[in-house]
View (tube, rainbow, N blue to C red):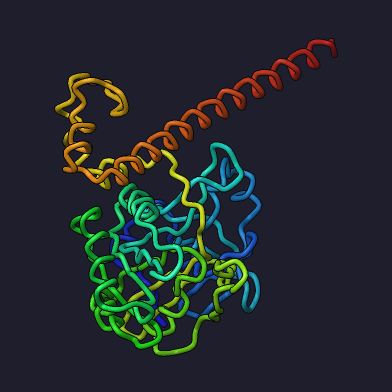
Length: 355
């Protein structure tokens, strides 16, 4: 299989030349598990690890390879390669790292489209859809919303759910499907273009792995049922994986994501909540928080039902998360800077005591 089959193009080749990587081989990360990688190359799928230099020059987790990355490699065994460098990324989908203050977690890189998958039977939540939209919009990744398991409801309920989503989420395609009856699967396939990379986003148990199986026509991914005791999905996919479909589309499957923490999301919130942002330009005060101020155009729009109240509340919640994340990052940098100064002072003191 040629590099072009999993997304290589002239733009990536130009980056290879620009960054003096022509002496290395090229591969794309298709799987990652605890800093061990599988790289897809023209020779096939090879086990990979990063060089010591790449490890020790990395400042954050973002400096390590991620699924979707194009990497410069050299072979050191029949089926093993070393990763020397990561090509500049076109897009990065990321969220707040769970349990780590001020850190980000990369979901996938070099993505063109994201399928945001939600099941209508259990955790259907438009607030969560808006969260996924925000991280997609921050990354300039085109979102497509998929509502799965429609075989469990009647047409009247489905029409109502679709209307609710489309009222809050404008100008984003919404596709209703059933992995059981295959209804809507052909419409999903219409959005898959040869050479483009797609990412699946959604909680565990919403049907992402089943969707990949249906799109490929093969049982590529293991599937599982919803737990009857917790009504939650089990993490069938334990790591990220890249799959090339027969029609030339490239799909990255991800473990289920229950927490979608908002990081800095530059431009993401503005695009997701475009109506609120436009209304805010007419607020009486430039620094209006849209919470208690007199003359707030946003609050007026909510009261007149021009803006959905739940969407407005979700916007305020994500703004608070964004501000908290930025504050934590600033505090972390300050601590790191102070620690660096302390180490430097200690070294100077130790050096002066020698003489």
